[in-house]
Length: 545
Image (cartoon, rainbow, N blue to C red):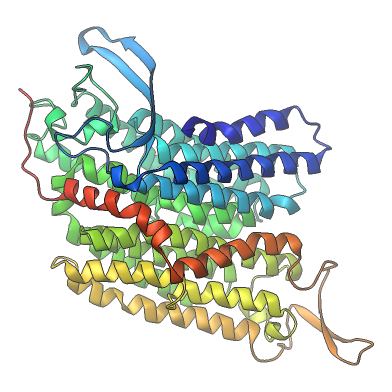
């Protein structure tokens, strides 16, 4: 089941290879069908998943893979390295409550991205082949339980994203694509070194060979005494933790590694911005929860205050930057930086409430920010500008669009009754419950105030009041004697059309339902989060003889 949901987009890409480039509509339909089948598979996995059996990788002394479900584990690469033993790499997949939530999010956002890509006209065949490759890589990262396999999927993501921004992006697309590539590659190189060090420091208790298994690596009993990253080598474990953390922090993105994100978002086409904000940013915090923290729990405990501080910086700095933007898309990009800071703050709390809020915030941010970028794309298609001051009074002429924008804006600022409020509330409950992060949480609350400021200010300038003198649209008096809006060079339907509603309405419904009744997601997470907190609790490290 997991192999099918991971590689289905690749199969769609192979089918697209056989389709003539002139058959653009066929290519789009093939990609859409593959994405819809992914959603069906995600639902099947969700329905067949038993939360009571869930857990994080493995607590010390736990069974090797007993906490995961839908396990697929077969040998992949096996080489004799002479004096270094054998190289054992496995094709090892599995899901728990943490990863299955991200699987559902990835399937949903990938489908929304295909619908958003319907207007792509340039090199459609190449675009959708790369898009499907990206979808496979993202899904693979969330289900891989072998570090080497995770790293392969992680690196594969770089290639399609680089070209999708660099070919189909805006005027400065080459600069943004290269900046994204170099930032992510920088973190990946050091991640590779840590992965190799862990491989030679851990023995699989079943095969008695070195292993890349994240399950084995998370159990402290499997570390070799005096190994380079064994529990006795405190210095190198700190170095490895920091290096891994930076690699994942770049993807979050965490201050000061955030500068690639606004450029990438502004230059990327709308569907790629949706994928980038909806899924790719979550891979950074997911990597922390799945790999970084469980493999070095004692270093994590020593770093809680620092992680919390960086979370607060993200929250407040991102909000201030968003407040200063005139470009609507760049404002949403900085708001993503701010809202991912809540995830870091929840992780730093290191308790069930905080981590539950962090993961729920990852899911909610994925849906809300995807919706925000879609809405930016809608208005840009019509007006060919994203400058906030070029609008005004739009609610009178685009009431459906204005209504959906209002829902998305208020969900982003955390209005009770919408999904963003629940996750942020859990984050702050967890942060206030921890002595380490309590004072940080008090400061971080200011981010909610600043978030309301930039969101409400932009809402007021764009949708309320009257048309600006130099607005991006004209007013015409129709035969009925009423004024009608006319965007320059726009020949389509003024308000949202059927395709745009198909993208936005499902996200709107999800945001409202999960704001009123969050248990469908929280129910998946609770057991896994509780076990994660147990694994990350202060531990006494032991070593193998």
